[in-house]
Image (cartoon, rainbow, N blue to C red; front, side):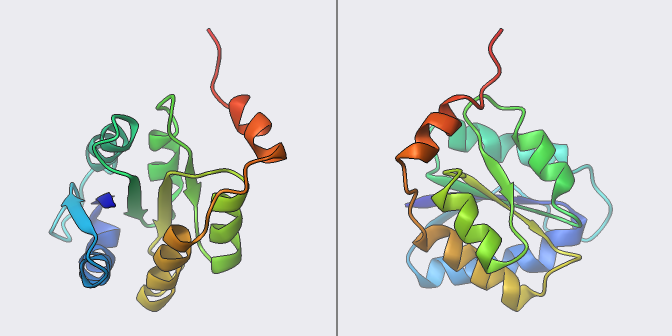
Length: 144
């Protein structure tokens, strides 16, 4: 498994801890985020992660910004991306079980680093249930 990760200035410290956590589990990480805390535009870091996941260069993605709303909105513009905002384990679990999310969006201003690491662990350990949920997921992409 390999993961693409992206973040804006609000998520820099979180990203470094998450990368360390993933590497301890022998998971390869592609870092598309800023390494600084100076203000940046989050879409610049979302697009490479969404492209990696959509093209299957990465198995999953992680995006981190202050509220997680901006990164989720940007990532969800991609046809085959299902980016869920994950701020607690229960929501994270349902995001995977019911929505088969392939990008985990973490709100750095509303979670601690410890919570974020738990969220990441839950995201990757939870499997999609399929069944009735698959037909709902099939209806997500916009038809032109």
